[in-house]
Amino acid sequence: RFQHTEGARSGTATIDDFFLRRVRLGLTARPDSEVTAKVSADFAKGTVELKDAFITFVPGGVSENGLALTLGQMNWPFGREVPVSSSVRECPERALWSRKLFEGERDLGFKVTSLAGRPYLLEVGAFNGTGLNKRDTNNAKDVVGRLGFTPASTVECGVSGYWGQARGLPVGSNTAVPRDLVKRRFGADLAWL
Image: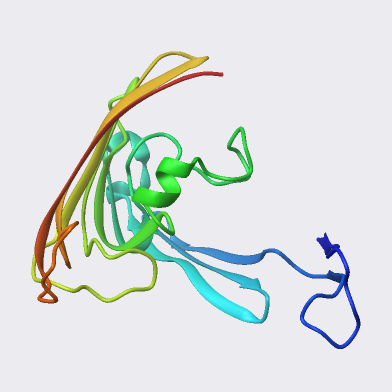
């Protein structure tokens, strides 16, 4: 990427420069037919950020057997946009709602995916609820899930839910004592491809 700054001067913080917005390195391994491991990291502006680090177990090694179990840091299964890679989304940037409600799109946890119910897809997981590369701030785990339906090859739809808690200050609070706050999010999605 090239950034031009109006009135740029050498030797100041406002200069014209080339920079890497995002470079992602991903490694995927399949040590046997039942296990897949994935690790990916972003390299940008002199920082390294771990994105994905998970192991998926498919009993019997065949998705038609019904379940996939995933443990580690992965995308939240909420809506169509949050879990989908930027390489296959309609727009390179995520919508404002998903950036605000699901910052970083990922969290540490455990997820169960039903693979055998085509045209249905059910994903349910328990997560820390704190987001990308962050430790948990309370003992509660957040439950996130999506039931997707593909009635035709060009139509996808689904409903999602998120139930959890966060440690923080209530909106409009005049106290400096953090407490557990309830997080409830519901959504529906429809895509015509």
